[in-house]
Length: 200
Image (cartoon, rainbow, N blue to C red; front, side):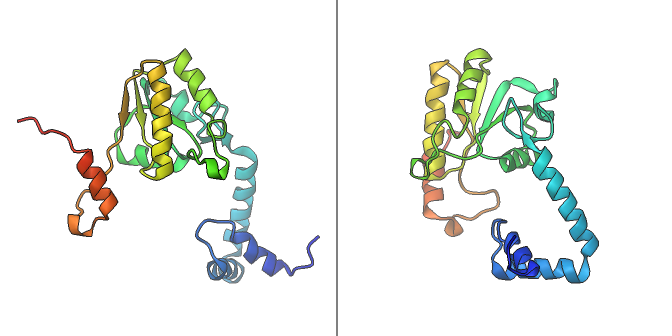
């Protein structure tokens, strides 16, 4: 049992969250203790349940309470489309922003040999089995446009080509409503090199 005061333990525990530093953690802890103890109790209950009951879908690796997530279990989804993403947050973003009705495979990361993240850590053996057993009509690669994301995309392309699966890559470039003068150079370069011909 730690001899550190419980308040200090509480503040320190909140720092496990991304983007939460010492001041933010202190502000959150004090807010719950001073103004919203019921909210804090509810948070603790839900947090404990989530840590115990939420796992990965056996088919796509997305987060779910069930053996198979709601997307994979939905017979109305188009099983000929398979979108590969890095994280569950990418699934949420695509579901909210598009009319995509296909399936997903969630890598839970990206290839990064320096950090010890290789194909096995991303579940690419399970993906290879899926591509061999039930090849989709199209594999959409939606990894992020980082160095690691591009390396992961290249690896995925090689996997798909082994099974003659058509591949597409989501477009990256100047955001809608953005202006070139305020866009960074690498984004402009990528958008320019990925330009598409406009049919007249």
